Image 1 (cartoon, one colour):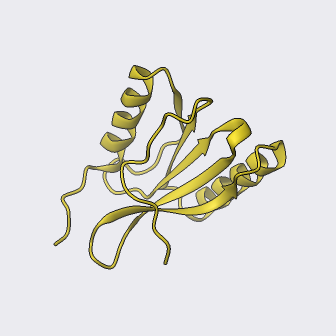
Image 2: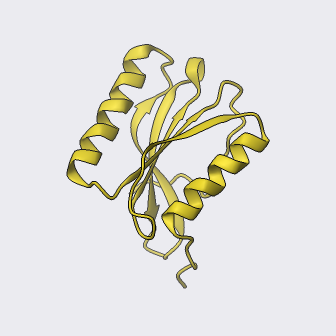
Length: 117
């Protein structure tokens, strides 16, 4: 059964609020379609790595996150690769949202499991 979904803009603003309440920096890098834009989450954990996740729907209709860029290396090159990935996706789809979370203490938790296809 498919889960009801929040509109993309509401979800992004909610995540920013959660981050602010926990002392985590979060910002919209690119504003997408308010209702149905795709969402990329750039999660920068600095020394622990920088990652880009794409919000996906599994075959079972459940929400999940798929890692699409980055890795555990905390170097500047990895972050630059993440930024390039996000820029490429924006060039293909102007309706996409990009939310960046700067999480020095690795406190931020994704709201759905990481999945692989």
